[in-house]
Image: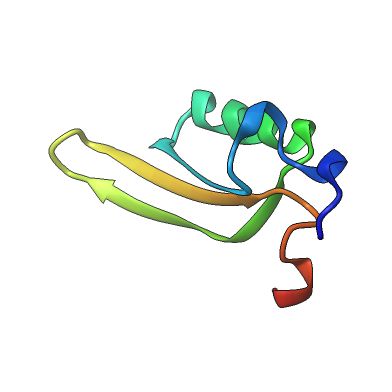
Length: 71
């Protein structure tokens, strides 16, 4: 059984996929998640949106201690 003290903050799930335009605001969101204790999971995914003429990025983060033995 998992120790309740290792649960993610604010009742969040153990996995999050952060998405958005590839800009400073997105980088700030990822940085905040890392400061809160989340860990990067896998490589980011990037795609170019020609209609908006900008890039969109996704980065998965996981809460440490959950499923580490299965990664």
